[in-house]
Length: 174
Length: 215
Image 1 (cartoon, each protein chain N blue to C red):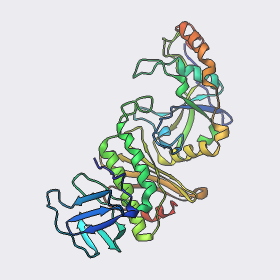
Image 2: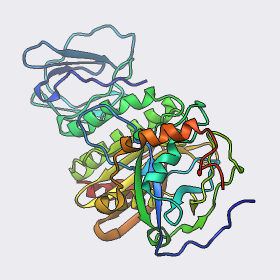
Image 3: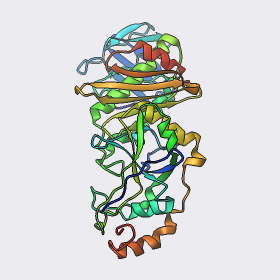
Image 4: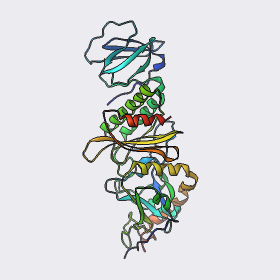
C-alpha cells in the first residue's frame, strides 16, 4: 500500500523548506539565494510539499520527526525557514519541466526518523542559473506572500510527544 | 591560497616603485607593505620618480603623483597577496567576508553539500577581480560588489542584484572536468538576457561589457 499519485493543479501551492547558513559580517544577505535551488547530482527535482496534504505547522513537525541521514540525529526544525510558492510560478518559468506529485511512503508504519510524506512533490528541472535567479528573486519580490511566518517553538511540546510515540503517529501510520 | 591585505588603506598610500620592488606606506608610515616580483630578490634601491612600469607578472602599474591611481590587481608577492584600489572597497570587503566559505565542512547546507574546493574559490575570486578591473580599465565603471556564496555542488556563486541588472555566475567544473564560469543575467524587466559560459583565464569582452550594467 502506498499513496496515489495525483496531478497538481496550477492553483495549488507548494512549500519549500530551507536551512539558512549563518554568515559572518554585518551585511544582510539574500535569502534564499541561488544555491538553495541548486540540485545535487543525485536529485531529479527540487523537493517541495503540496499544500493539499500539508500546512506550515505540519511541515515543521515533519522536519522535526525526520533524521538527518548524515548525523543520524533528528533535525532541528527551529533552524528552518519555509517559503510558499504558487505552482504556476514554476510552470511559467522556461526550462522547468513540471511540478509533479511524488509522495514518500516508507512503510506502515514507517520507521522512526523516516516518516511518510503524502505531500512530497518535486519541481522537475536540470540545474540552470536562470531558474535559480528567478526563483530567488520571486522570494524577495513576494516575500510577504512567500515567506511563512511561524512560531517554530510553539510545536516543541507536540514534537516531544510525537517522538515519545516513536513511529506510532499519524506521520508514520496510514 | 591568496591572502588579502586587510589592514592597508590604499587611499593613503605613498609608494615607491622599481621594476622589481614595490613599497606602499600610509601617511603615518605606520603600515606598509613590501612586495617583490620575484620571491628571492634582495631589496633594491628606490627609484624616486613616478613612472609607469610593468613589473609584476606582466600586469601594468600606473604610477601617478605618488598615489596609485590605477593598477591591475595582481599576485604581487610570494604569498600571493592581492592589491585593491580604494574604489573597489565593496568588492574587497565581500572577498574578505567570503573567506569563511573555505571553512565550511561537509554538510554545511544542513544536508550533504561538499566543502568548496580551494581551487574553485581562488578561481572565483580571481575571476571577480579580473573582470572588475577590466571593466574599470576599459569603461571606467566600478561595478557593485556581488554576494559570494557557496554552491551545493562544490561550485561558487557570484551574485549581483543592482538597480539596473541582475547576474549570477557559477564557477564550477563542467562535464569534461574543466572549470568554467556559467552565467545568467538580465536587465530590469527581464530585458537583454544573457546566458552561457566562459572559459577561465581570459576575459570575455561580451560578458565584461554587459557587466558594466552592474551599478
